[in-house]
Amino acid sequence: MQNLFPYDSYDTPDERRQCIADRMLFNSRAYFYFHNFLVFVRTGMCAKKGLLSADKQVFYSNMNINLVERCGGKIHIRGLDNINKLQGRAAVLMGNHMSLLETALFHAIIRPRIDFTFVIKESLLDVPFFGNIMRALGAIPVTRTNPKEDFKQVLKLGRETLAAGRSIILFPQSTRSSQFNPENFNSIGVKLAKSAGVPILPFALKTDFIGNGKILRDMGPIHRNRAVCFTFGEPIEVAGNGKEELQQVISFIQNNLEQWRKIYPEKQN
Image (cartoon, rainbow, N blue to C red):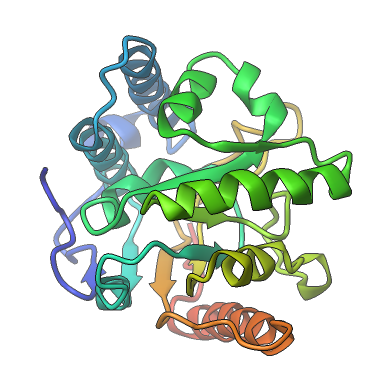
């Protein structure tokens, strides 16, 4: 398994430049989405054949890392050593949800350290190729139309998954958004962690390198002037009713987003 990120942090090297082919297409979204779609299809076909091993997941995700950097994106990662602090324990990873980019990159970033799956919207299982990938990962589906039943589903399947030693990535704000609104960040991840007796591992991300499209939501503009950032916090053990721990995660996300705006201001195209 090739681990592109063996250390605690990573920054795209300054000498890594946008590829000529992308520039020749006038910085449009064509180059990125064409190659991203090829990776997506290859991954989905591999999953359909039952061959999507952890090594393959990392391999295809590494291709997406490389694609972002070929298109001029700068990736910054911090806190990977905090994942190692789990020491083999399963955990609930909770953070904000900004674009499709995080699901494309997560395998390259954290799968060399832990095994994991996602909680996803049930309808996504019907999406060609993507559904095959999520089934291969044993993703936990929720309807997002019946909160009570979704909660039962996440608790039941989540406890089984965590008991088997697999961590779960969960986006409590439900839908992806470039803006983080704490009011939309629910407590289901905290409740799952408490019920299963596992820690929370908070993460914050900034993936608005890909925008949400007006016509095709999943094929929005590519913002090459926006940094791609991931930060992972220390594991948090849940005590009491979990309200304090939920606020810790929210504050972690807010603080990192604010810090990134100062450190990585958008450059003029």
